[in-house]
Image 1: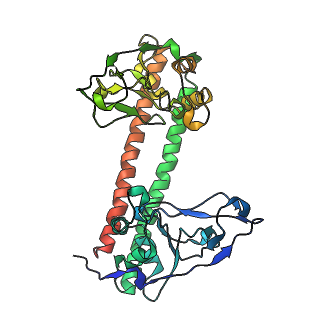
Image 2: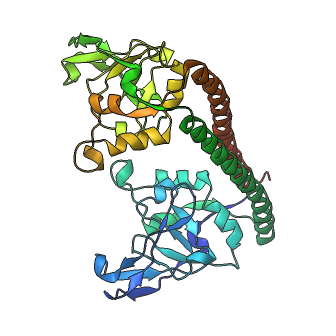
Image 3: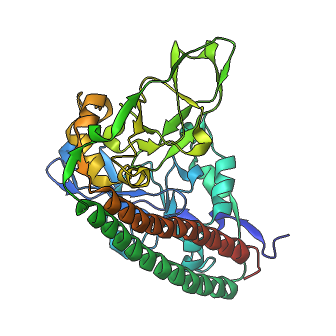
Length: 380
């Protein structure tokens, strides 16, 4: 049971707007709101003649603001000083916070609280997650914990101190990760003379006919060298493909459609025997020429993704395709085998550090959510 009384947001929020007519000859800096309570962001300046809106709402420091369209996803914030005077559309209502009832610092932390986001999600209107809308009436009727003002200020102060420490840790981690990634790129870039990927990739086609009554476990590839994922099982009768390509552990595989975006991978052991369409060519790695561990790091290398982007065919970013011929002609650093193995050892260590850092990111996020839950349940 919550130790604090629940009150409607409308108890301390009063809608206020500073509506301005758009001058076609003026330039406006507008703002948006990140989901999950991550604050405001600035959009690129736009000329009045380039927008479809006739009016903007000018926001003020200290206001409460939310997105009708994505309020259910936690697109809420209080306006920081650096956003004072920026503009938003009518889809972003703004409210004065009655400081005699609610401490603005306390309200700022409320906007980041997953518990509030969940309430707004449950109250959204519309069909489907992307069509839910949180109207003003729904927002103002939503209840939140609200203790006495002195207690609100105490909670806000403790959360300010805790979030500042978490942010400092996050900044230090970002600096460390940027250094590791720069070292990673530097090691590969200086690895040796460039050679086309055909020197060590051997096309493999383990094609099997699709049987209508058979259930197939298929796979996909994340962009930016982030590995593979499984798709939901599908019956042969439910797919348009007449044949599937069967994967084998240790193969090199990529997406013709998103190779330019770094959709490359080495097939992990747990994906052995899964299936992909002909849009995912597969290759054996010639272990006499290239160390498979070294190649595994190459698929995550941003410079390789950029090289493939420059070699694509098709019009527009979503229609670019990387043919097998283009892939195989792309050059990468390929030092002698002993050097590849030495580099693979060093890159394995760096990858372990980055994996540990990703785990720490999840732990920091969980810690932040736990602190908010404790705070608004009277346990901080």
